[in-house]
Length: 274
Image (cartoon, rainbow, N blue to C red; front, side, top):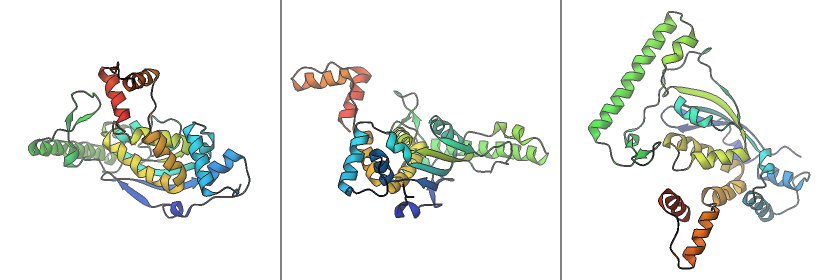
């Protein structure tokens, strides 16, 4: 198979895409494209002889029926900078290869995530890991921002003092907060990237990691526009129904009452409203 390049992706190489206040993602390298998915699926050589429409149809068929091994032949390498609390959610996707900056060897920078005023929210009453959309009074927003900045400045000042006193970096770092920025190189194939994006761009994910998901999605779309269109069609805007949900659909269509209730009914309705 010939080496594949994509002009839209080439234009993004080494370009910082800003995320949050101090974060970013950068596409360092990539391997493959829509053409690679098609080639590996057909086990062909060279550029192939099919039309763009046929290639798009094949890619859509593969994703729709979960024949995803050809998608593993497209690989992305990113340089990412994010707050540690975002990294700890991100790392749950164990199908990647990564190398993270180490506070044992490097002095951590005086860079911390501070949310914008409009992202300061109350705790959700019905979602233990979510935010309440209700507006927070301006005076409470000011209080939260001041507390965050004070704590960050105090902890980093103590950290810097220990570094200046030649205390081991692996000890000096231990009180640094989750808002501290970290960096890593992150490599993932397209099959697993779609799984990552589906979860991390979802409205139920924490807003901060959604922002990274959306930034990475723009890169993936540039490299594999046909595959990304199928991803949006089937994984983002599509829905999979359980046996109970299919039974409910049949009963509603027959004029009967929906047997689902509680959270199961809410989740069912959310799928229908996509």
